[in-house]
Image (cartoon, rainbow, N blue to C red; front, side, top):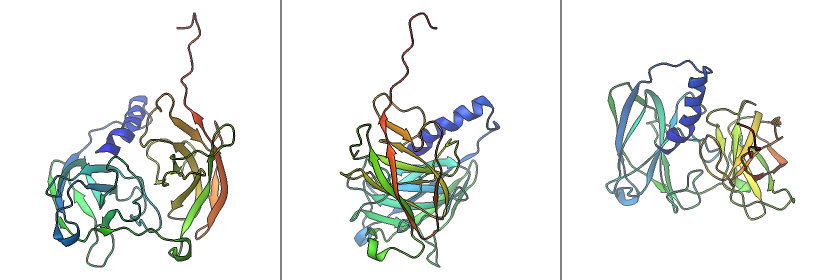
Length: 267
């Protein structure tokens, strides 16, 4: 439940401040089993849950959503995860680096659980109850789209991450929010930036987005020395992108986070 712990810290602050109405949170449990190639258990993999209604359905060939929950699978491919009551989409993945969270890479085992019509299946969890996802099979190596074979409607923001000297920054992540307040869980996330600082942030639809850059996943105050930046600085700049278009040339300067030092005599 990596993401719920990290982004949930932000929600807790909002509740405490009165920005979000406090109330009892109903929770339930979702369990199941995931099989990989050859009907073998997807040992050392993970299940990824996306809350239905919080964004579009998962479509990894077009964009990558920030998940609500991530839970490890055991050696038999089984999982049991406590979640807030609601409806969820489910994906399964086995990564080359288990600690990494984000879009699947070429060759990593991946699957979005689908219904009989081939659409992302919905799993409903009621408060105080346990729901079973059953056995989910068919996890296969993921193949990332190429520029020449991108699906219809492919929409993205593309650019470069640079430091204060204008040099490229490798290995950071770009998050997309739909509100300039940029509070809570972002909607979309890019792969980590390349050696030249280049990034590609895929989104589901045209519209206005606000971008934040970090070198780790999760919400809350960044740790000292980590990369942290908002496109536009203190006043976030909107990025407008049309459906089916790739908005290019969005350069984002970043710096290392430093906590303000308290002057002597200040309390």
